Length: 247
Image (tube, rainbow, N blue to C red; front, side, top):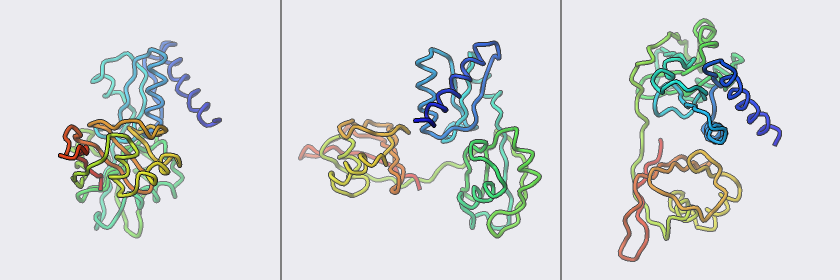
């Protein structure tokens, strides 16, 4: 509760700074759950805001409170992009890169998404920490690395997905989760009770909540899925869901 109150106070502070004539106010990088909560606070306060992490599909985002239009505001975000060069990029993981940054004393909230995909290693970071990273990070895992600043216009490799289809008795969250994780409905209900399920980056608390096309489900310990379609039924009346799992 104390952490949540502190977070709410930080968002309220951004709102007050913008209202006080700052023109725009930015947070540090937020987790998807924090982004959802920050958006709700801003909507309740009736203020204009934008969540952006450097590219459209980013997971970790910065909150900007401002009345500027979207394109103008995106150009003002204090985000820089770093490219990591090394001899064998495919041998490194996201965890390797994050571990090297944490070992250097870097806080997670000054870092956005870390992308290790298709031979590229990219780090989105706050402007205030970027020069330090460029000058001080020289190894990741067992490899020597060279960091350089990349253009924010660089095309970001798309994530890899596994596409598949499941059927469920209904669109209730517990029924869908059971199908995604290949567990019983009772086990799926237990996952929800244990607060291990996020729906659209918000904690799922009601087992009866229905899933719709476009929803994102994250099950801690199992993975992350997106529901592409759920408007068909089998001859026996079961719902057919077209899904993708992030790999």
